[in-house]
Image (cartoon, rainbow, N blue to C red; front, side, top):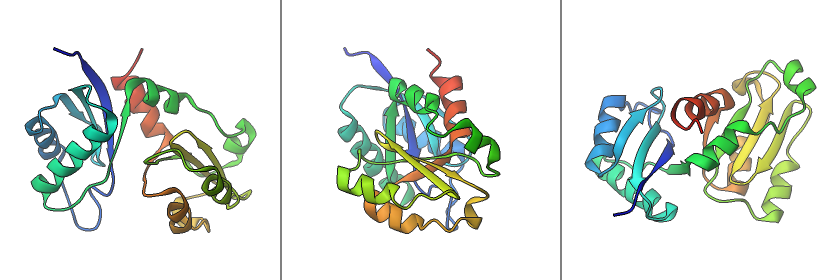
Length: 183
């Protein structure tokens, strides 16, 4: 029998738009899907679990189908393995001086795949001194100069270029990595 691998799944829109799923319900749904060691981090669709390696695409499809049945609506899932999540948490794409000058929190958008070069270039062209952007692998990093709601960055335009995503603060990603994926 294969050894289980640890993953973090970042779920899109799990507790938005009048939908509320308690962490206990989400944990139980993942357990019914056959995952082990399931733990939820905050009430925003961050789930850590172990699964026998089956390929990330198959894993994502299984979770999306299972949650669709359990919850009655589609949930986009962005899984990351331990090594990849640690790498994302360790990235520092922005100059320390820009971080210090910003009132905003660094954000990480989990993408379904690395964007093609043309889409990447067009997305990065939307950056400004007020909204700094970086793309590394399957993640878009965003440093807003203030609160997200204050930004003039067209997130819908970015998403149309890069594909659907789910976003977390870099601090949340770092906390999940430290708590559940420490090497």
